[in-house]
Image: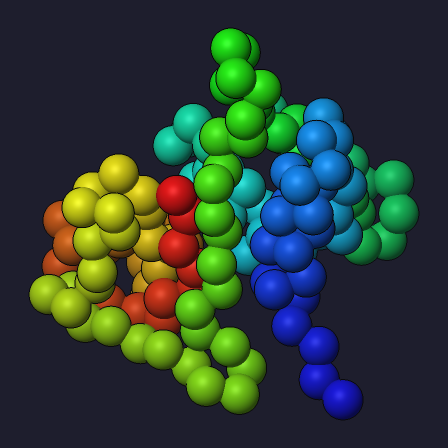
Length: 132
């Protein structure tokens, strides 16, 4: 049985948002660290911390909520490319999410980046997930 660590990462964030948790802990990997940095840079999470106390390490993510309505900032976080069916997109085929209000996270030969960055750098790659 194969497991999908990125899908597990996204599901932990989704479940913590649904339960209104402030912090979620996720086992670390290089791809998850890059996705976390992108979520922070785009304003979807408050902060993050990489802890290397164990052999694998842990990512602690502080989730962000609207101050007035107490709604989570991440409305939907969806895995696109799965181990059973990989989804690739060229630089011209990377989709716009919610007409530019959301982001697509793409794994390219230049590293993990948003869809806008990939279009600007004219590189395609594997579409990991959509966030909005």
